[in-house]
Picture 1 (cartoon, helix red, strand yellow):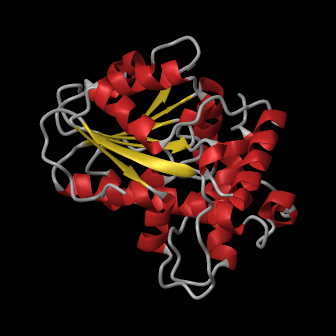
Picture 2: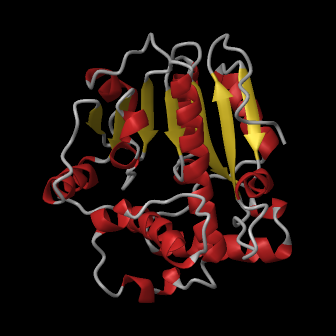
Length: 291
């Protein structure tokens, strides 16, 4: 079994570090991912866990997780009964939020090796897999994930929430467009929340340096960034794919939602933004506002 990749582990550790070092109120409380990752006693001494230098990246991870789960809770309250997590990694929604997750069919889509590893870790921790949680192992390079999703019990004629965070930058523009077209064809009322990376040229000098450093680390880890999009380009792609409603949610809006009243100055790192798009003829949602 292949262990989760370094990005999935880092995300889980940053979520836990937010609870450990940032004062309350916590934007997102997830210490279970740390238990799943099992990094060992010295994990907080890692260079990428330095509370000062990694603060804005940590904030970005917890803000995007909170944004997605707020959306899932909102849509579940409206009667949506399916939640698909593309590139699920060490996501712990099903274990942390059973009061919402148990009302849904939750589908975690990920590479077979890391997903098998995660299942084994859940068993080791005594957490198990409830009936409403479905693991969907997919080799994204060779197999259409939507075929495996249907085989796992996804109902294509019922609306869903689909989350894809931290994935689009590793795919080509063509692969992203194909994913958008597929999800736009899901049942009316389906909502997609997808992050995308801004081109470095749209960032100010300081943020551009951060972005380029992150890109170098990603390439060194064997997971280079492949694509980036301006907000206008991403919105155009979503509309061309067939979404009836598409809005851009900026990092500044995430700051306003989740960090505005904090005394510690915690803010999200710039460079990763959200697309929120609705399939079919559903009315415009209230969760996201165009920036």
